[in-house]
Structure formats: C-alpha cells, structure tokens
Length: 167
Image 1 (cartoon, helix red, strand yellow):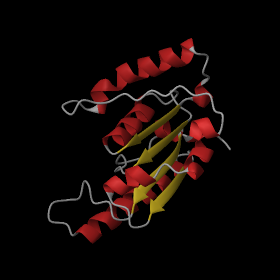
Image 2 (cartoon, helix red, strand yellow; image 1 turned 45 degrees about the vertical axis):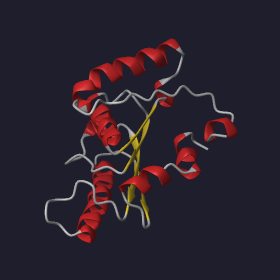
Image 3 (spheres, helix red, strand yellow; image 1 turned 90 degrees about the vertical axis):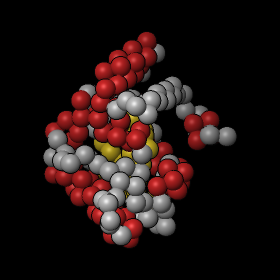
C-alpha cells in the first residue's frame, strides 16, 4: 500500500516524462499548462500543487520552479545538481533536496569519485543556503552510502512525504 493510500490522502499524480532528446526547458510551457489545467479542473489550490523529480526529472523541477514560480508550493528534488544560483523565483517554492553522499553523476572529467561525491553534496548544501538567503525555505537530506540510483530509490521516505503533505 502506498503512502497516499495509508494516509487517506486524495491526490492527483501527474508524471510527465521528458524524451531523451529534449530538455525540460523546452517542455516547461507544456508541463506548466498541463498542471495548471488539471489543478483548475479539479479544484486543487496552488498551495496543494507539489513538484517532484529525480535526476533529469529534478532538473525539470528546478526549471519549472524558476520559470513558473507560482505553479507549486513545494518541491522535492533527488539526485540532482542544483542550478548555478538561487533566484527570487526559486525562493517562492519550498524545497526538500535529497542527495546521496556517494553520488558521482555529473562529475567533472578526471575527478576522483570521492571528490566528485563530496563536491555534489557541497553544491546542494550551498544551494540550500542560497535559497534561504534569498528568502526561501530549503531542507536538505544527505543519504549515507547512496549513489545516484540508491538516492532515487531510497530518498522518498515517509518523513519527506510527511513534510510534503504537512503532517
């Protein structure tokens, strides 16, 4: 039984996928229109629209939150490198950032795996601080002994979903 079923939560779940040859930036307008339309048609207030993504999907979440700051109230991003800098638009969405301490995806060429993983954790911690400095709210969870795939598999815990749904 899923978290949503166990907790008696009424939810609409949309899971758009980005084709490998397209970037989320190119699809942002379409996804924004889809989410906005379905939320409006079903009476879902903006405070109850959440974004979630892992890896490339997290890049899509960052992009949507930046381009459409009133689309969602909260977002969960897992196994992702954050944008280069936090903006006022991103600060309008409350973020929960989940990163594995052994995640080396996106490492620079020739970089040692341990350095790459530590750098990725640092980038996410720094970005959470930037969001807070811009007036936003950001939480970060570093998963011990988790690489890219394990972060995506283990990151969405009941504690994170409790935060998302305000429990």
